Length: 173
Image 1 (cartoon, helix red, strand yellow):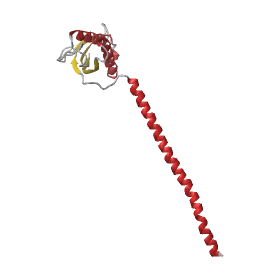
Image 2 (cartoon, rainbow, N blue to C red):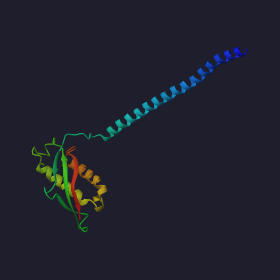
Image 3 (cartoon, rainbow, N blue to C red):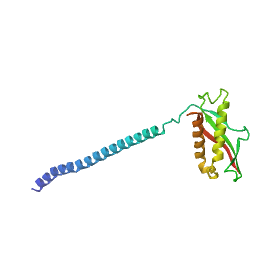
């Protein structure tokens, strides 16, 4: 009888193991499905956000190489009084514009500004620099100043005429 009980006990163990293995397999399958679902959702959200960001920018940052034109004197750059008459401060700046070579109204084949465009560029740049307050010339605000110059010049010369503005030297005294 003892042998019969041992024989009965041995076959009873495998159904319990199958019951234990099936919940483990079920949990593993659910975890894998959950990870795949999370990865798919994050991929969808990321691509959706990237597409929305690209459409909000509107203007493409990719463009043909521009023509670099230095404003003012070739050696000195631009010298202008800033901060009003009573401030007594002067700005000596080397400003280089990256111009759209496709705009033949503004740029010659030799890489120089057309006389009419040169007058508009210098006038607009000098007006922006003269009207700026002294705290606007802080190093942390130079990107705002560049953007302001670029936007104003694009308004005067036509959209897309100026790709970017660069300061090669900047001395305020």
